[in-house]
Image 1: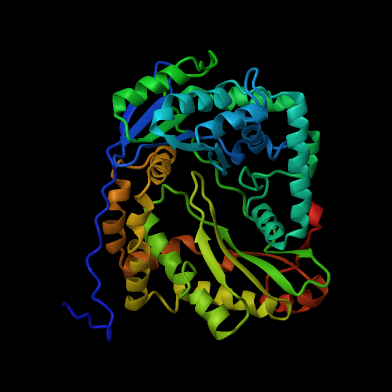
Image 2: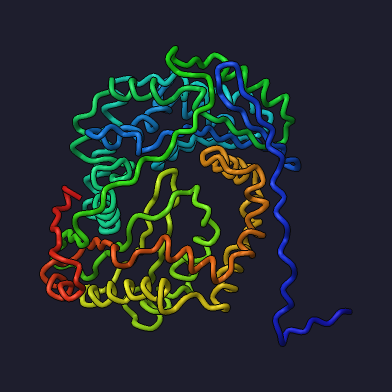
Length: 460
């Protein structure tokens, strides 16, 4: 009988290689792109419909319109009510998922292979022929208004809204997908109908199907379900790759406070304009952020949580979009330590850019954090379909995911330093705080961020 030595940890084996399934690509006569990938072993199909229209496409006076349109898709189709649509999905053991971000709307569902034709028919029904009944619109709009009003009592949501408004003044990225109370109350169902007719057109969309079926069969089923989806005459049938929004103007203020009298802690956002997903520094930025604030042993967390005890946790991220997304540090901190926490966070930004570049040990830890569990992200058909949607949205190379681990392994100290110099700007960072103004404002004056902008919760 083999004896196991439990006195020491087992040796770490080599990293498994990611083999991303071959994605076959077809374009239907109406311009809809159909991408398929075989995933054998389980009788399951995952479907993702990507529409490259997100909250950044909202009209200036109607923030929330894109999300409202997406929310209305499964509120009835043709003669079927919302409850009948939901019941139809339930009968095939599936549920429609709807997600909206700044750049895209994603509809997703997973079902058994034997229900593939039915699933595609239902997906087509809600996307191509939504009912948009006025009574359903009023109900959904009122629910969304209630949600927005409730968020005024949620410091994290208020901080996110405030930060976006400061970093992106008068810009498509300057609001959250949920929109504002004023815009939602003024919204009419005709605006949803018009937005859907303009943005939900087959030449702009990509249908991705992954599972236990071959390409020809899946394309045939997609043609049966979506072949009748016609684009308006003015829309070209050439696949469209909308560019990201232009860069915003520089913020006029560097410090904003949303007063919350008596709050025991402050919700803080620190950051600035970051990079676009297409940046050639992509892998170096991931390593840089992991060192700075992307894992538990990051510099920010070890300083503000473990050493100073200011917070239960702090993290940073680059939100890489089609346009230049934000770089942001997020934390909740005791009210009495608000200014000190902001000072320490800004000092860590400055240090990694200038006086204290990434060490060899930090580089090794960050690379391992990014790659050791990476293959687990491609175990299911749904995970593969969502990964393919990222390729479609950002026009990435077909072998992007297979090359991720080798690319991260090649990131060295020079690349991280160059990325920090190019994409971190501590001297231009803005700070948004939801907290007790009377208690935090005097100490914040010592940070040299200028006169704070005071914003009411309803204005955030």
